Length: 321
Image (cartoon, rainbow, N blue to C red; front, side, top):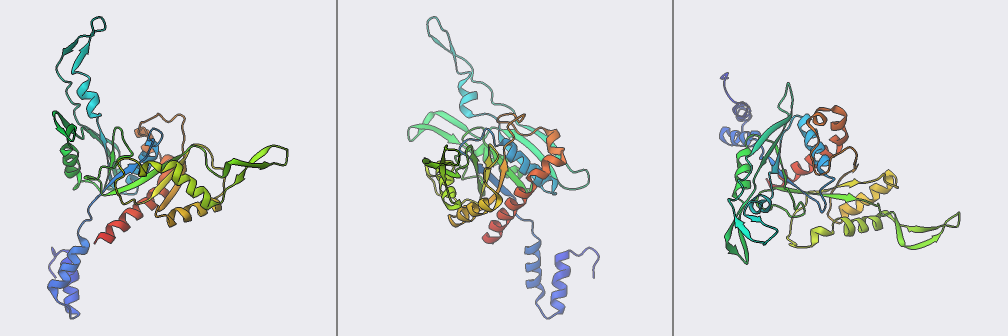
């Protein structure tokens, strides 16, 4: 057997010795060994300020498991950098003086963590996602060119296993032309384990809300935390799962949460896990510090959810083929 023969060719030759056709066996082996297309993941959330650490923790857990992960973040909202330098206001006479438009921020790339002896890596890249022509309108608004985001994604496909899109604003709106998967992040402030509209006397004379069943709690969570999915622009979208982050300790046990998960699954929302928000000293709207990305304790906290999410993404990708 030739020394430099590929594994696919070796498998095909073995199959041909067993009576199969070499060319067909080679085609099957080559297809099975072909690298899978990377996931381009977009998290959806109504309020994203307290969710950056969750996203960063999931990405770090993937990197520590040997995957090459890119956090592709929008450098700046178009309107902020475009309009900030267009006009200069003068308070006294309210006259506007035209000025040169502000220059768009330059792309930046930094490695947050890299395995010393393996392929795992976590890279953070920021760049502009879109440009708009303010002179031409599209249905009454400026024409939006999303080619910078498309180019950034296309340029990263061969280098990474997972690309996570992080918009500067508007987490609730999906980037349908770039993302291949969408996962909902539901943020829970007060867990709905009791109906506050009706009450019954407690043992000490106080009034307590009537307890809700797990199915009722799941229905309230869908209405309260996932309602943004059904508002404007109300585009059909295939969801790959939902992750819940609670602001406070949950007042229910694991069996109750399992019932909530079963009802979510029945409604077509694949449950991927529950986590608790650590508000302090976590900065608002900022990814975890690189030191945290290297900390094994921080990474282990997100490994279960990251593992279930990766399985969900791989299952959907396998279904396509």
